[in-house]
Image (cartoon, rainbow, N blue to C red; front, top):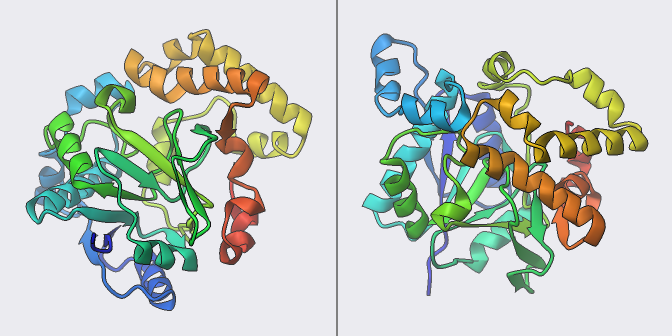
Length: 313
């Protein structure tokens, strides 16, 4: 009989987000977890510790840019957790950032002791764009939860479940160093890693207005369309469809590749494959589109439905 998954929380010391998360975990009946605190880089020595695990060459090859300190720091903390999992042979682990709000269904998931063999990830929330297989890989009837295999890359870095096989492959693929963004720094299909998504989602991301990455990312990853303009576009259905059509042309034609300045493998996984699938799905409806489900009431358990209005474009 497999044990319940051990929970690892990534946070910073004196984080108000962690205070709120601890309170919520207690409310839903979860008392056991291990916290891994990040490095705040407040001294040169601390910053050097983080940069010692930063593979600048691989990052620039994959992303086409350098990573910010907080981006590197988040991945550095995650690598520490993976190493701990391997060292202590934790067969079933859940890693969560401190900016998540778990459902009561999350506790039921832990009690059900769901565990998959092989290098796999189970995500409890993902943001668009992306696609899932319609036919569930597994249905947990007593929880009324289905597990769907990802057809494309998913932005699933808030909270996810991993096993020893995944951690072992991750550390081997990256040589235990930061090689890219935390969701995740290699090509899933090429690495032979399966990523699955729960439906409904079992948590909601909410940073409570405190983000360690937002300002840095805005400086290095400027969109061609401002956030305010996106919000206006997303209020009108026909404009949404026009924007999506433009994105399909942009990425499928590889025009976007010359502006992204990233590796071809990264571009194919994060952009090309997603928008080719978008085009296929528009014709055949063979897959579940994250764009269409992530802000729908039926995608969340009853106690999380109230948060739908907070979802951002």
